[in-house]
Length: 220
Image 1 (cartoon, rainbow, N blue to C red):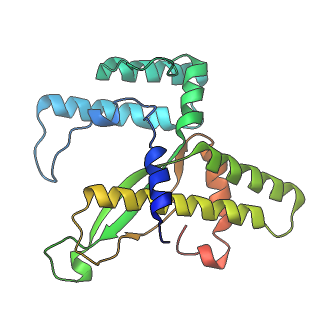
Image 2 (cartoon, helix red, strand yellow):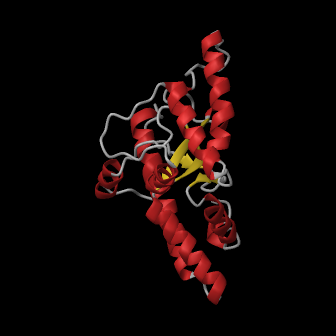
């Protein structure tokens, strides 16, 4: 899908704050095969223990609040901005609503300076946060289709909007961070690999439903 300058600027303006604060930045940034220091190993262990629990859509309310508070304590995070949601249950739920549903998108591209060959393709995984209004539209349209039946035109439209949004985000990320060979495409390998966060269960159910339609096969 092509991205216009207007759409790209909208994406930039809608750049979202991470509700998990600095937990993801807590993960050591190392090249493959590079050894971690003892401190970095502890940080990685903390991340691996906390993130799956925080991301679990079925986590108990009390546990969710405690996990967010623990993440802030471990990383030393203090939000300097006034009016941001706190780590009460209301605050945590508002964080989930405000900052969307996370999906992890595999992307392939040809790095600069290498020969055009399939074996030279680089594959990376990017976390994309789907805006809450897009998630709400998909979940609502799918629920209405289940209740009424018929041709799921609203579910299709909502799915297309999400795919367009993912394309826009990947386009922006690639412009900022990929050293791709000029003229070579940036390819999204899969648009649906399972979501976590806000309404993740309903989102995944709707996306799984869309797999039966021919033009989405191979994409999601």
